[in-house]
Amino acid sequence: MVITTEKLRQYAESVGLDLFGVANIERFKDAPPRMHPAAIMPEAKSVIVVGKRILRGGWRGIEEGTYWPNYTYFDYSGLLNSFFIPWGVYELACFLEDHGWEATPYYSGVPERQLNREPLRQGAVPPDVHLAIRIAGVAAGVGEIGWSKVFLTKKFGPRQRLHAVITDAPLEPSPLVKPGTICNRCMECVRGCPGAIPHIKEGKTVKIQIEGETYEWADVDMGKCTLMYHGGDPRTSPFLHKDFPGWKFDVTEQEVSEGAAYKFAWTLSGAKWRPSEEFPSGYVVEGHAMLMKWGVGEREGSSYGVEGSRGCMRSCFNYLERTGRIESRFHNGAFIKRPRWLLPAKTQPLTKEQIEAYRAVDEGRK
Ligand code: SF4
Image 1 (cartoon, rainbow, N blue to C red):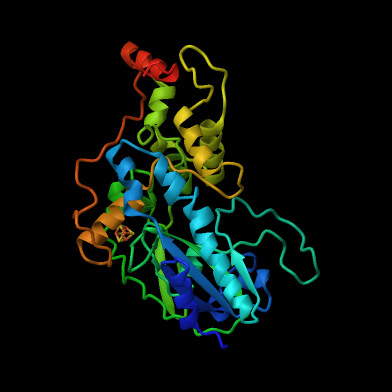
Image 2 (tube, protein in one colour):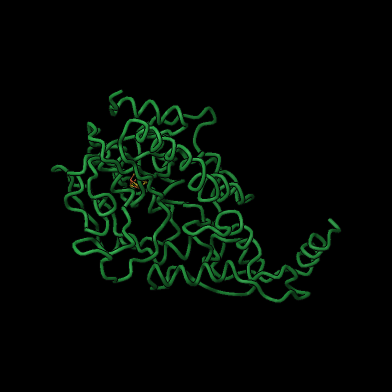
């Protein structure tokens, strides 16, 4: 049986994937060698990019300031990135193989670094190749990249995660989503982000071209973004207020690289410390450590989220839904329903009553 883009689309839907598109390999002609699909599969003809939605309700608890676990566990790296999507990706790759085509499933966990290394084979690209999955998504016509650097689709706005399959099957490419189809530079992402994307002041942007279309987005300060997202920001982590009362740390004043931000936030979040009467949990930040268990576990490439993309995701889809720029509709109207919360950069010392309340929970008295 001949495989076609349309048959693959139908198959992808049948295995639970919400988004699907195909890029021909020519659309990657400007990609750096260590980010080129042909560096993984030299005979590659097509890159299939698929995705699945992040549930809008996955953010509800964080938006209300009441409940964190489900976002990391279901909607981020715990299951969505590590099980729900990869299962469909693998089935899609098997489907291609059943038709005689080689297929390489691509897991889009965040790569932290590409070390300078020699190629293992003469003429090859050095190892540790990774795709820019959002750019692959643009090349496959799945969506565009918004001003916030977040990938946007007509179905869900910013609410999805992407994976890919590289194959030597020659497939009809999907039409590109033209720049500006979804993102109209409303800047709700900037207003909703707690000051962590000062690229606006600097006016820096990133531009790429695919088949004559220019896609441009803000050059996000990933140091500040990473600190905030992964729990280094007292304004967006109530867990820091519990475990570091009286501490002041203003993310907007930090000028650190993304790598340094990861080192700080992940170490802070995952580290253990001897239990004391004041902090009986045995963790440096107990709430973060629990999120890490659900999102990271022992797996490489996994992650956890504390801040929950207040601006670049929640403000963005709230706007896109409200203005009808995307297809998502909900009976309960706008996502943001109440005044939003933001804590002070200086954590509040706990009262005696609060300490006693925490202790009672730890000791099983409540
Ligand atoms: S909120 Fe979304 S649509 Fe508006 S500028 Fe930001 S990325 Fe674009």
